Structure formats: structure tokens, C-alpha cells
Length: 282
Image (tube, rainbow, N blue to C red; front, side):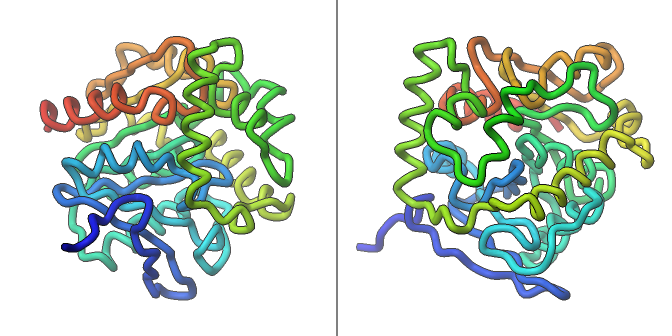
């Protein structure tokens, strides 16, 4: 009897692309979802329960950006170029259309990919992120204080991704931490300021928004689901509010007592929201 392939045992595979190698994993069957990661995120830092529940109805593909984690090359400083990783990986896997799902920094990359490759994105899902363009509410200092440590411990994770004032959120943080810890190579997580600066440059370019991606959210035909916590210290949900009534294909869900990683705290609920969204929008 063959062993079921899930997030705990899926093989790390490699797409040989021009000038770089992209590491990826794939589980499940169905319409593909390509997950696009956060600042410092790698293949190992997604909560495996979240991936496994998504994979009950979909093919779930995770990958590391060029130059990050298990991939080779260099992370581009322009999110448009980072988004090319998504398109090139899809082409390598012969995927003509997919659901694009981005978390945090990856949400900015996902917006760029959605606008650059509209034929690829059937749906867009944005987790713990904000719209491209200038922020109404900036990063909280507490996020910066913990996000830039070379190695993050559990207490850092609580502050970065959960709501430390909530006992329920802390319990969810511990459970998520323990699941992720079962398969993680900490040495692959970006830890130097040199690499951090590559992410920062991409974020600064996204804030400038010279390509007017923010305005394109107002005209896109792609259905968009946004899921945020009510206390996200990195991408405050309030940054979406000025766009109220201007985004004809977007839905916004705000989860209470939740931080920067709603999909790691409220896993069954978030997966249920995602499944309903995908089933009922075109």
C-alpha cells in the first residue's frame, strides 16, 4: 500500500529555469493553487495542516523564490521580476491557469502576477497583505523589532504572526509552530541583512507603484479574496479601507483576535472560506 503524499513527506523537486533553479513541492489533485510566500518564508515555513486541508480539493504547489531557501539564483529587487518566478514555474509544470495565493510580501508579488499574467490567474487570494501602493497604516515597530532577527524563536513568531494579547491565538501559534517544526531546515531561512535588503527594495518599489497596479485592482476581471487579521502588525487591514466600493471583484474578510497569519491560526475556517470563494466565483 503506497504512502499518501502530504505536506510532511512531499518531495522537494527542482525546476531548471534560465539562470536559476526553483525548488517546489506539490500535493493533492484538482485545480492548481500556487502559494507565494512571505518575507523570509521558505517551503518549510507554511503550516502543513493548512496545505493538507487545501490539498483535499486542489493541487497545492509551494515554491521558493529565486535565491531563497532551496532555490538558486538571486531574489530580484522588483516584484514584477519576482512574479516571473510564478509564471516560469507554471510554464515549467505546463500549468496554463491557476489560483494564485500570496501571503504578506507574497501578496504584493501575487498582485503583480495577477496583473501581468491575467491569462494565468483564474482567482487571486491575498492573505495578511495589503494593496500595492502607499500604506495608510505603516508597519508597527514591534514587527520590525522581531522580523529582522537572524533567527526567530517561538515568542518572535507569536508577535510576528499571531495576536499575543489573545490566549486562543497563542494556543494556535504553539500548535502551528509544532507542526512546522516537524519538517524545517532553519539554515535555509534567509538571515542576513544583505538578503533582507532585496525584499525591502521590492517592497519600496511596490509602495511607489510606478506600474499603477493599485488602480488595476479596480478594473481587473479576476475574482479576489482578501483575508486579514484585525491586528496585523505588518500589513494592517485598514490599508484596504480607502478602496471600499472601488474593487468590483474583491471580497474582504477580517478575522478577530488574529494577526499576520490568519491561515495559520484559523486553518479550517480559512480553508472553508477559500473553498466557498472558489466554488462560487468565476
